[in-house]
Amino acid sequence: MNFNRRKFLQSAGTLALGSMAFSGKAGSLFNNMAPHPVGLQLFTFFGIIDDDVKGTLTKISGIGYKEIESAFSKKGGYYGMKPKEFKAMVNDLGMSWKSHHVIGAPFKMPKGYKMPVGADGKPMVIPPMHNLRDNMQEIVDEAAEGGLKYLVCANAPTGTLEEIKSTVEILNKTGEAAKKAGVQFAYHNHDMEFHEVEGEVPYHLLLSETDPHNVKMELDLAWAVKGGQDPVDLFAHHPGRFPLWHVKDLDASHVNILPVGSGTIDFKRIFAHRSAAGMQHFFVEHDMPKDAYASIKSSYEYMTGTLKP
Image (cartoon, rainbow, N blue to C red):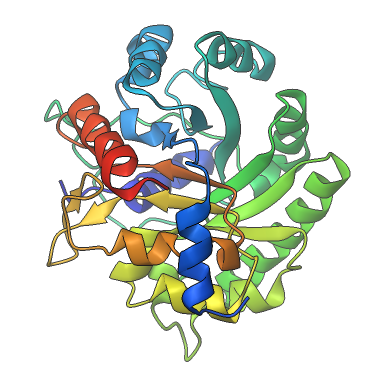
């Protein structure tokens, strides 16, 4: 399915208007590390999880996932719950809630834009969402209330230099507020941030013009590859800036998203350099799969059986 998180966020943003150097040593270190808990980004279950939050999380835990990054809910809040309620549910199922996604600012959609179609063949209904531009302190306070280690801006407008400037300001302000609340703030990319805008590459500006201590990066490996980037090169130029990763695969055309290990991305090479990246947690994700459970099971089996991160 070609529909992805970026299109979802842009749609949601419209509604919101109304409301170590790299050497052989790196590979050696990687091979000697203990296995890392496998995490899951719950956007994989958008449109599914709200029908049965506990049941969905129970199945996710049963597959073996140990860490959770939450996303957007049709019920609002944290899948219809307060932060502490959601945290308690996740913990009771033997998992740990590490991170949460929010949008940076509403997007302006092109005239005549039609909502994307969901798995049921009907246009998706997306509720208005809070965003960092308008609701930053409330969002940060809720993250702290839930005991979250990370708060992540899932996406923000970067289509013009003016939008990039505004996004940089939002990220820096949120990063400062989050630090005061004891939460690490980060920015999650899609491929669009790697496409030149008015002579500048948005992602390079986001990296260089935000405080490297207050604003870390959650690198979506697949979107970076789709954007023509080599994640290992990014780690080399910005060591320690990437504590969070999203892990999904792409086919040879870089159009279709696939379960981890069934596509063309060389995850062994990337994970071998996780120390230089500063990676602390990673989350498997598959945007709008036909069968979310089958996808995350396949990804988990590859992660633990072949990759052994």
